[in-house]
Image (cartoon, rainbow, N blue to C red; front, top):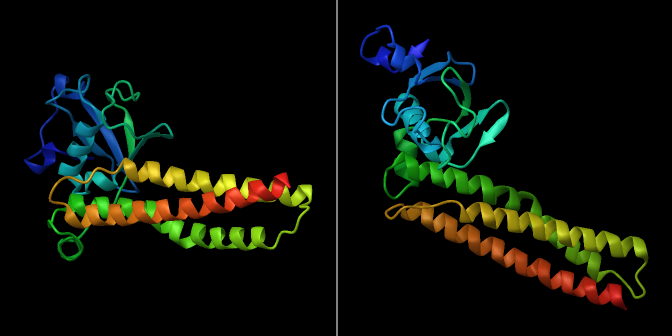
Length: 219
């Protein structure tokens, strides 16, 4: 089993270390043994664990996903104890390392964490570009084809579609709002601004069509 200690030569963990040891499962690799020292397991928060995992794996914190017993861990300020993590617990970890050349080409800072933020932003915005934009065009066309009086089936279809599109865009905006780009991460900050502008523009389009739907349905 891979351990932090193994990087400096194997030794038997002390009783105190065992009380602060958890295991991280990364894909099909051998579980990683992580010993939390400062802070200790009973005081550490999720961000502390992510930083520890970064030390071992080289995966940027920004792209890490952790789960315990099938539950995704998202609040980085939550204590490990409140997340259900105890000594001997196994945490499932997903995330990919990035090569230095890719980081240098796609970031302004040369920092893998900035690249991780760019990847995270892309995972929020790209699905919107891939599907929701075309869904909005279809929604607009369907509404424009309606003639008064509109039958009940089409009324429900338009209302449900409008609600669905608004919710998807709002969820994406909330997700982007949760992406914090530190000073100096200019490329990531620009990507985030572009994503916010796109989502706001699309949301305005949906709101305009929903206003038309409201008028059609009340006529």
